[in-house]
Length: 332
Image (cartoon, rainbow, N blue to C red; front, side, top):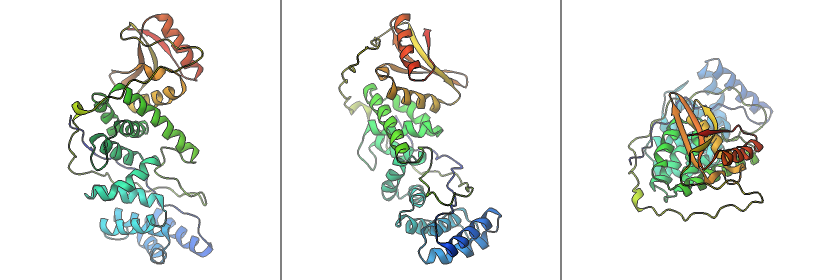
């Protein structure tokens, strides 16, 4: 299997942000952002540069954006990375995310990886895609298929189409038990992101006051030569986990059967996988069933099975509906 890094998601929103600053400084940054939004990039640069030179991380981040996009200045990725690096050193998380992605795109994969690992844990989907690929291939980091599957699942759930494609490839090589562990880990990552106070779909947490202004889209990012493909034949499957112990046991999975339960139909495969990830964390025993993604044209139907009888399918649906999801028994 040749598992490529692929093309990064285009048009990602990484915005110029008005952040908490003291009185006159805030006015200067705000003036620069207003000028940027009006297309007066030279004025924006004039407002931000002295602040950036004096060490303000928000102005440094905005200068990095300007040099990345080539607005108000000649585009220069090296200078952009310098500004991102200065802001990141002061804890500016958006700058750290952008720095890691840009370093990776420019070929410094080893140097980018620590930044990308931090960004992936904050929920940045492109970083999750890159780190998930590295963990799957054992490239730059140790091979960890459980964590690779978890990160790729989170990226796919946020609509990154390359991640959905990669998951389909991973399904062919990662043992079922490790995939289940990966989905459980993905659900845990999502919950940790919520507990930390930022949504998993956000590129990075934003300081709260004042509110961020509109964002500026970045151009597509295309990593270069893909790393070597893994050798799945040498991987050792994890031992099967014991069946969960619950008061009212769910129907036991069987090796074959004529029934499944259908949990929904989706236009995006990533949305189907996201629902599966959520439900396996809520419905005890659901993760012991096989995940089926049945494609009909542009529609992907999410099903679980096989199930021995209609009665068992009904009982499983009852448990799933109790978790707040739709469920329909289906005879195959």
